[in-house]
Amino acid sequence: MKRLLLLLIPLVLVFGCSDTSDLEARLAALEAENASLKEVTQTSTPTPTSSTPVAVTQVSRPTATKTTSSKVDAYPYQGTVWDPFSDVINSEDPSTFLGIAYSGKESRQMYDRRQNDWIQDTPHLFIAQYSDKLTIEVQVNSEFEDLDIARKIAFDYAWQVGQLPKVLRKGVKTLWIHDGKHPFGGGNENILIHVEQGKEYASRNLLEEVFIHEAAHTSLNWPEPLLDHGKTPGWLIAQESDEGFISAYAKQHPEREDIAESFLPWFALRYRLDRISKSDQRKILEAIPHRLKYFDAQNFAMYPVTANN
Ligand SMILES: [Zn+2]
Image (cartoon, rainbow, N blue to C red; front, side, top):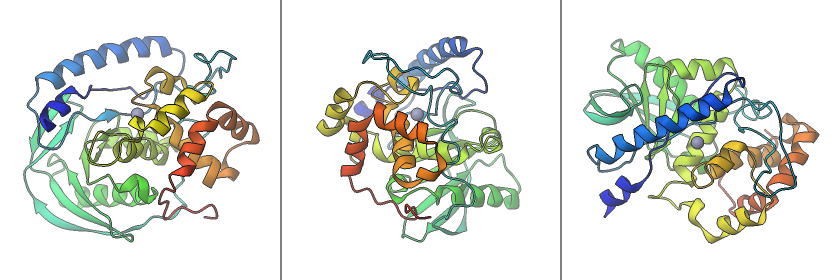
């Protein structure tokens, strides 16, 4: 039953991209990519724990904001990982990360976007420990032959994941880290990382926000083992009650991306109010008031994040 369920989970992939001029072309490319990847998923060997990663973020920087009175058209942003939310978590914010311990190399199945498929590798394994007792196995692809380099990569990403509130980390059991420049992904009790892409996200100060987005897929909006908030009556009613969506990307994929897209603005509004403008505060409040209330009502474990740090 589990395998059947996993096979039925649609495969998704979205390109992060750098400018807005070719949004339509990228959307078309995205749809084509999704279609081909879906075929891959449906024919690939099922795994004990996973389906294909839900992917990243959105397709474009938000240039033209669009809010109309029509329910189906209303959204203030193209995608929420970009400006104006890029400073919601920054490198000065605290991390729960305590340290990593090397535990050798062992065979693991990982998803690799360069192959668009599952791979079997013998990655370097590191156990990352966090101050709230959570642990994550960090799997660094064996292509990083130098252990010191692998350790540095594992350390840096494990530290950044430690900045996420507990509610977003509790579903993350592993990190898959590969070389290459392909979108990050969430789901599968995992966050998928491609190092060259990570450098680009970091250069735009978006890395922490991408982690929020992907971890929201993994911990809040995935079929198992945690509660899939996207399927709860409360969330579905909230979606229906709001006038529209927070972003074009959420609207485009209301089942898959709405929670990941909406969580970051909620987080900004409740915990990082001083890092977004009054105008953006208003846009969020007007766009998704019922979704905000849904998140409020969950009493999420937010450590190490407080409204004061
Ligand atoms: Zn996403």
